[in-house]
Image 1 (cartoon, helix red, strand yellow):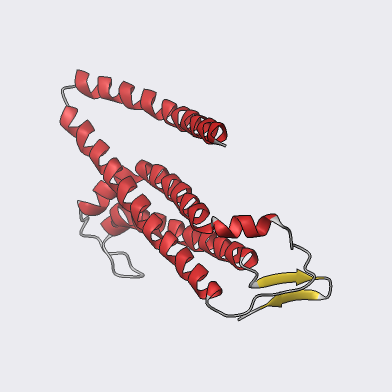
Image 2 (image 1 turned 90 degrees about the horizontal axis):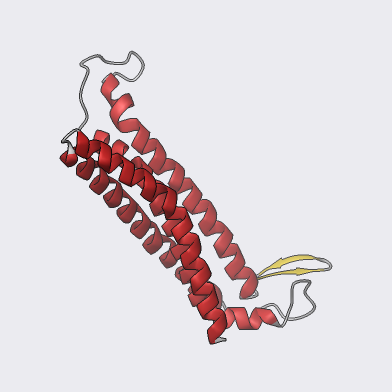
Length: 196
C-alpha cells in the first residue's frame, strides 16, 4: 500500500513538472529579454500579479468548493434513512469509498482549485489593467460607460464569470456523486429514487 502511494506521488510530481516545464522555459526567456532591456521591474510586477491572481482565485475556489461539498455531505448524512434494496449501482466498494469520502473530496477540490489557479496566472495582465484602467473620455452610446471599461476591466470580469460558472458546474457534479455514494440517489430497475 505504501509503495502505491509513493508511486502515485511520484507520478503526480512528474506530471506537475511536465506541466510547469513549458511555462518555466517561457518565463526564463522573458526574464532574459527584460533584463537585456533593463526593465526587470516590469517583469517582476507582471510576475507578481500572475502569482497573486492565481493564488487568490485558486485558494478562494478551494475554500468555497470544499465547504460546499462538506455541507452537501453533512446534509445527505443527516437526512435519515438511506435507500435499501436492489439498486443498479449498489456495489461493495461504495462503502469503502464513502468512508474515505472527505479525503477524496479534499483531493478533488484541491486538484480543481490548482487547475483554476494555474489557468488564472495567464490573466495577470488583465488584473493589472483592471486595477489601473485608463479612461478614454468617450462614452458608449448604449450603456453610457467609458470605452476604457470595455478594454481594461471587462475582460477580467468576463473571466471571473466564466470560472464561476465552471465552478458551479463542477460542484454540482461532485454533489451528485456524493448523493450517489451516500445512497441519497439510487437507480433501480423501475426508475430513479431520490431521498430528500
